[in-house]
Length: 451
Image (tube, rainbow, N blue to C red; front, side, top):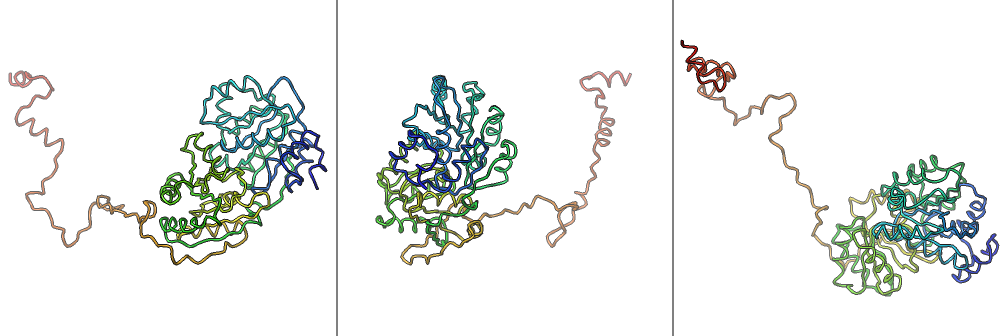
């Protein structure tokens, strides 16, 4: 089947020709007629299969021209990078249509976005956090929304946007079409569908957690983090094979360590991206990597969802992700658009259980490679890898005991030290003996008493 076989109008077909797209992917082919029917849709497809195009084409096909510029389509995505990517793809598809698309996300001036909303738009692509802030400020009217698309909803829930998503949905008209696309189906996602969708039709082109068949997966058993850095440097020396590489780490501190550890060897070839970097820095790093100015991009999992960068030769997991789904999305950055991809994962002994969970989810084994003999094994450990020394609290008594157990060093008190604590009665006896004032501040009390 070609795109010309779908019920597309001439402007969309011309835009697809300009982009060089001829054949729809399975998720695009299967979802198009269902979305066109106006029913609620839940699409499950592995990353890299073209989910953005799957919902953009039918939405643009059904969206009529309007000179009122009131938002009629809302697309929610988890990250700033994904907002920019979706806006870019929608604008390319709507090249021959008069539709205005507006991207909204945090980290930029909110007043600028308020002004853009006043000027009007047809399609809003937004992260839930900033959209909710604008809704509270009454800067955006969501009552005109006809189509709601939630892309990568499981990521948004993992990032803690459940409250914002639910409240944004409450602001939408009851009569609307709701569309959800994700690569994984979790209990949280099912709850969103149950509460906000009306008899949705599910389209699944792959089992949740199924990796792309054109990605070769290999792994190494490695002693510790700094040995992983040595292995990473060894692999990246082969510039011809590893010509466009994304290196993933689970958290910002780890990503900074990776960047600092190999920057000296690849300083003009490496870029880094995580949530502590400014928006301009992040966008510049992505553009440099896309353009081939940088060969290596070190990133946290913020890059693992939805970012479409062509011709990534390798994805290297410097750590084994705790959540198996994160691994699926990481390796999905390579092998996109039916091209061959290569993924490598490094695993310590402590991470071996995580690898087992990943293999269980994928229903396949990751091929383990022998550790290169010419790579130095480091003895240096990160603070997280160092054994934690537990100090014994000698001040705590065991439950039910009145004091320390009598041992060889225990001695009974001498008689002179075995005084009884008389407490208040002792103080009263002393006061009576020395005729202390019974009333505080009344120094004449004793004189009156003697008379």
